[in-house]
Image (cartoon, rainbow, N blue to C red):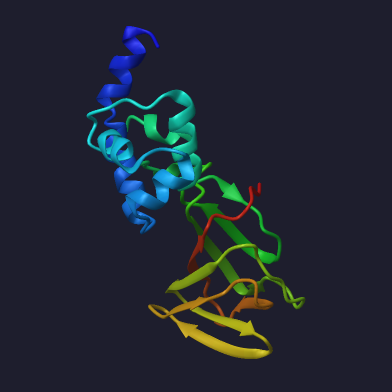
Length: 193
């Protein structure tokens, strides 16, 4: 590793980020160390930035934590997506405009903003999604969600959380006004355009 690369690694506090990722996943030092083929003591030193991991060890730790090595070198503590830069996406359905609110490549969760015209929605055919959790927040208007043939009507300010593998449909349930909905999925859905 070059001197400049080592300085860059030191500046981003890899150990601190690894520890935060481990704690967020509620894994013990022993669990991660065992899975990565390291001793608990060595992993502890890495997390406290008292020891440097080899590239191979770092890759195994990241794999154990479900991180890409590149995520450790992200120079900013967060990713800003400005309203004027929301990329439009299309999941299908009709009478909708949808925008991706989270950065491309974010795998932990995905947020989508939908502007749904009166009567617009996903269509009549139930669908399911490959995520663990789907969270719905009605920003304005009224949304009807059909889960297993049971309709739930959500008003502005209402939320719904469910397992998106359950077949479902949705539609705007308000005449003469668009419905705005925030959808959050965890983990993020496969890429759509």
